[in-house]
Amino acid sequence: MEKVYEYGTKFNDILTEDEIEKWEGENVILNGATGSGKTHWVLNTLNKYVNRRFKKILFLCNRTALYRDILIQKDECGLYNMDIMLYQTLESKITKKEFLQRYDYIVCDEFHYVLTDAMFNIYTDLTYDWIVNKNNSIKIFMSGTGRAIFNKLKNDNIVKEEFEYIIPYNYSYADVKLFSEKNKVYNIINNIINNTDDKIIYFSNSMDFAIEIYNQFKEYSVFRCSESTSNEEAKKINDVDCIRTYNRKLITFNNRLLITTKALDNGINIVDKNVKHIICDVFDLESAQQCLGRKRILDKDDKCTFYIRNYGKKALGNFKGGINKDYNPVKLFIEDIGEFNETYNKNRKFHSNFIYFDGDKRRYNKLAYWKMLVELIDIEQEEKQGYANVFLSRLGDTFSNIENLDNIEQYNIKSELELYLRGNLYKKYYKEDKKELIDKIGLKDSRNRIQKSINTLNPYLQENFNLYIFSDEDKRRKLDDGSVNINRKKIFWELREGKIY
Image (cartoon, helix red, strand yellow):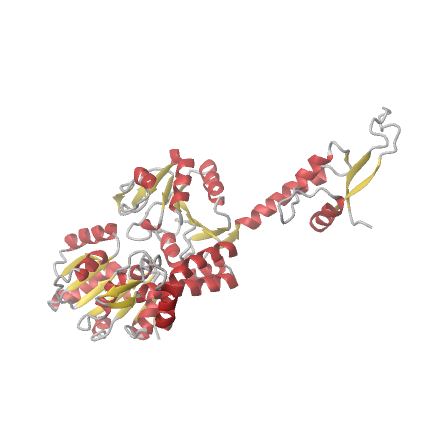
């Protein structure tokens, strides 16, 4: 069985030199929360252990910002027995068949990269194969969100369960607020900016929508995405240097709102008590969890609110359909090559990024296939249990509070309507006034048509407010003040309390 430790445990405390001694001939998983000290342990305990034995470490990482940070720490600590390399550099060397020396330890930081990027970087499987086939090296696979790739490593017998060390996330510093509609992001940001002095990070699943949000809140915002983006508008507004390190307790951006994408999902940490809100509509569960972990907590007074989009069934179906377009041809290629040839070879427009020629033999990208399979399984679970329920179960049960903004909004709307209705009990609505009441109630059918009939409005008013509309002819000749009733013999509506008999 894997070893699971208490919240807040540091790897430096549990992975002693005595524990490292047990790894001879084995590979290891460090499944640790953000801030659990995975990198710190490598640069200190592991490095000292390896240095005394004249051995060598290859440290692999996935983002340029993380690579630069590790290089600085390497120089500061004088770690001359450790080489640092980007996974992308390794992929390039493999494809060019360049010489790669032997390392005693290969540390694979943020190893979820090989899976999360497999759909758009078609060479991550080369990295995976090269690493796992280095039988004369001890591999240390590290991530805080590597559930899917760690399962593959264990399924493929690359790592035994007893060599997985788990330090879970503790989100007790955070509240969660769920929202279902994409456009709700506007309201959330607007409310925070107008009513607080707090800072916000927004992680967007869509580049186009991120740009829309930036244009709406330009005076408060900085925009940060990948330097390699192909979006021309994003290139113009991209501020790759917007996050600055002032000291170890202040790494932040200067404006109120940072709008970004998964490009910030790891390698860049925000340390700033004024950042109190993280809005995330990134769909992929592991990437979304990485986004939530970008703010590092300084102490018990450092709090945050996570706003997580709760994708509905229609959106889940759209994501599922997009994945199946790539998944189904690969699945058929694996299961029935004859049927695959019959189905796809006649279609000259057919192309798959995940089926390729290796010499004169066709192969499929096993890592991309695993990624698609994992995502489809996740979506099926989300369709049954709800996206937010699945996501929150992955994050654990340490949150301080969870609210659904959609329910709160409905409650607020109902409260405003109820105040209006009860404030107008026994008021007579004549023909020219009825529209005001109808519009205030705002009841619509499935085709978005406003409902105007008493027979339709009364069941709604009865169920929600214990009220009903009474309709009659006004037979009064004079009003209470003695004046002539100009509405005599006109039909009116009147709001009344109680049950309809």
